[in-house]
Length: 90
Image 1 (cartoon, rainbow, N blue to C red):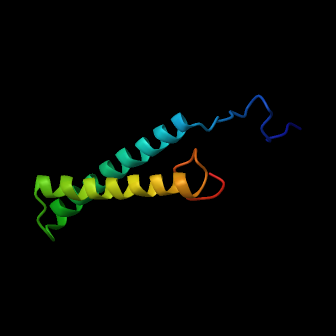
Image 2 (cartoon, rainbow, N blue to C red):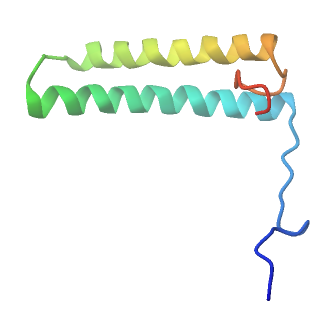
């Protein structure tokens, strides 16, 4: 019977550095912007519940991305310096 547990050869260690933090934070900010913009435009079109112009949508998505950026910076100074997460073990 073989074991399903990972062996040391299967595990990839992530070295947490300032560069890792910067890439993590940039990825979070970009995907927050994209997800917010996509959500706004999808919700505005089919239901026609509200009208969102292109620049209004971009502005709203930018605001969400800035909030994500500020949260990541707070996490850097409040928790682990090399993580953009407020979770203590991330």
